[in-house]
Image (tube, rainbow, N blue to C red):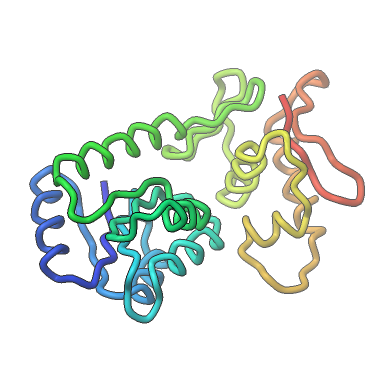
Length: 220
């Protein structure tokens, strides 16, 4: 598992990194928020340990920026800030957990393990007879593997993760294609048709429905 530590106090970084590497984790560190953000755009991390007070970009700003990129990597704040309001602010920004400094290393390790267990449970997505393994990038329909392109896989996974919610074409273009300017959303319809054809679902397995003039919704 690859963990990113964003912390400007070298002593704390050394303490955490040494301990976590002994636990078998791979560690990358950043000494300011901007560098931390840049690293999240270049590499996929399994978890982020984030200080609140950082140069160039605060931990709170970094957390929000990461979530705006539709990055769901678990984030644990490590900070001396401990008021209820500050805790709420951090969680609202998209943090998954909050540990007050100074902290026990054993507690940190256990919190990390909990998040990895939760993450593993979320690796499988289901939609009726469709199963999606987000780690192996496999799609099964009635236990038979279906070959999708990378973009088709991302689009199908996005709809299933948002099961029960109407996903507008604009949202899909921004979140799946990462395009944030005016763009012909008709390309989405082409991909949806390709996905439906490859899944070869029965009439009663019409799990992906078109919401006329708006977008699509996935439902069991």
